[in-house]
Length: 432
Image (tube, rainbow, N blue to C red; front, side, top):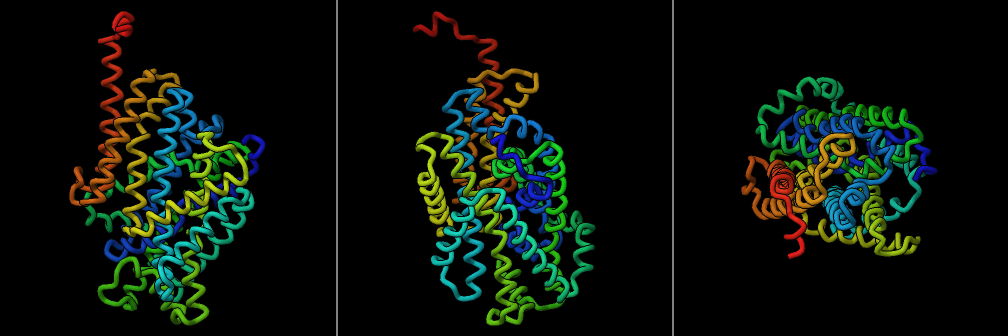
């Protein structure tokens, strides 16, 4: 890994942005903006804040190189490595599925059936994920520029530039209609996820020096903020222009706007603008698959080879396709899986960081139990709220999933520590 440190500031920033600037970012923001205005950019703005927060751990990751499942596994044992890796792997399947759902939804405007669309996108994700990351950075930069100019062109046609410039000032006031648990659940799950997100880690450790790491994170955060208000401003401009049909579904808003600006889905410009929506999904989808494949290969279940890497990549793409075929809401799917991963892993990882920084040393048993109980609680809450969203305990689905995992994780961590300190197991009782 050390010899592959070639990414400069701009390449790193482009890859960090591409890791999350996908269809969930764009369509999810547009969907919420239909009712919340600038407040619909909450998820996107949280990604920028999380990228800034990541700078606090950037040196740690860049120096240690290894991903968190390897670090925790070295600290607590191989079983923990597999457990954390599987949680990260599972969360990425949901994120990958969200990109496939979004892409299929966009192409429905052209009358393309859902299944062939998802199959084609899954294949494209797999192919790009197998390319060298340095080459991918150039591809991604080009794709991001295409999408950016498509959205800016839409703003210009609808006279929405002033709406875009005004949207950051209206952001907080627009969120007043959103409940506090919902705001906290979306923002906190997203920000904390970026601190342990191995999609970011894979690029951080390939930066050529620490200066590039910090500058890349800062530039990526700025770009994410600039991009965050593009979809919401475009929806607001379309509402002001009166081009959106009454009762339109939020997911249809942005595809409809771009097709209208381009003169319809049968016109070259309309086709080009619609296609630009699919572009960011290639970055997020391929980045996600690359991390999933690395997780499986790190388990040493199969020997590292080009064939096995291809086999694992195609298998991961197929599993994501299965989840995508079941459908689901875009933002809910993404943030709910974020919350499950954070709820399961964040407390054990925080305990590990405290020990590594010379603070309190939690026992291996307490960290293991925290991971186990946090995972069981987060996954149980995830399944329950998927079946019945009204079963959210803390006022929002995301906060319930993350909260249950972290609460049981903290409780198990300290309870085990107290038991070991005040009720130590004697050598005689261990032999019984």
